[in-house]
Image 1 (cartoon, rainbow, N blue to C red):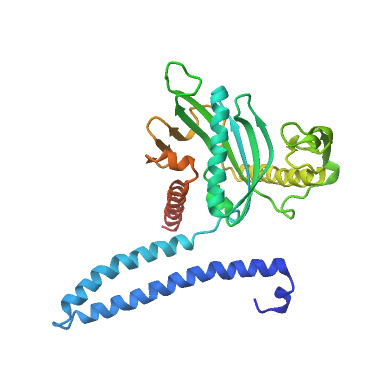
Image 2: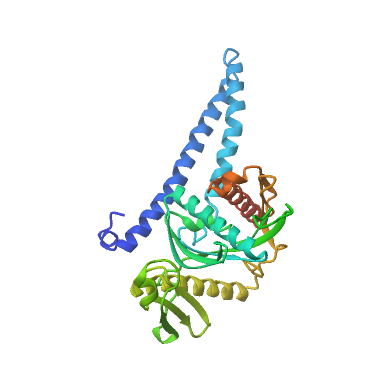
Length: 338
C-alpha cells in the first residue's frame, strides 16, 4: 500500500486496500486462536499443581469449545470468496401466477427489500416499473448499490409464494399466488464490453405519474442488444441521458449473467433457472399471512414473524442462508481434500 505506483492508481489502491482489509479480519481471528491456544496449554500445565488443578479444569472446559468455534470461523473465513460478493445488484421482481393478488404481493416484496436496503444504508434506484390496475406491480427493476449488496441478496432469487385471503375474496378463502425475484450482480465496464454497433436505442414518451414533462418529452429509453435480443427499458428519470445511463447498467448486468450461464454450460454444470416459470410449485419461500409464518424451503427455516419480515427485517433469513451455504461449501472442500 506504500508503493507509489499503487498510491497513484486509485483503482489499484482500492483493490489492495480491500485485500488488506480482508486479510486483517483473518489475521485478527488467527491471533485470537493463538492466544486462546496458549491459555489452554498453560491451563493443562497447571493441572500438575494440586492447588490449581480445579481452576485449571474449569479453564480447560471453557477454552476447548471456544477454540473449536474459532477454528470453524477461521475455516469459513478462508473459503474461496465469491468474486461477486462486493458488487451492487440489479433486482428484478415480477408477478407470477395469481393475477391481481400476485401484483399486490410483488409490490409488497419490493417494499420489503426497500426497507431492508434502507436499514443497510444502501441506495435503491428504480429503472422501470409497470403498475397493475389495482395498484400492485406487474414488474419492477431497480439498481441496489452499497456495501457488499450481492453477498446479502444473492440467495433471494427464486419464486416467492404467498398464502392469504385477498381483499377481493368475499368468502374468506385463502389463495396462493407467486412472484419471481432475480438478483443479478452488476457488471463492470471491463467485464462486459458494449459495442455501440450492437446496440439500438429507441426513445419514447414516458407513461405514468411524474408531471407534465413525463408525457410530452421523449425521455424514456429502450435499449436493445441486437446479438442476444436482450431489451432494457428505463423511464424513471426525466432526463434521457440519465435513463440511458441506467439502462446501460442494467444491460451490462443481464449480458454478464448470460455470459456466466455460457461459462457454466461449458464446464458441464447444470444451472437451475433463478426464477423458473413463476409457477406456485417452484417455490423457494412461502409467506403465510394467516399464520404469520415465513418458511424458506431450501433450509427448512420457519419463522413466525412474517409481519417483521415484510417490514424489511430479513436479516435472520439472510444470515441462516449464508451460514447454510458456507457450511455446504466447507463440507465439499473437506470431502475433496479427503
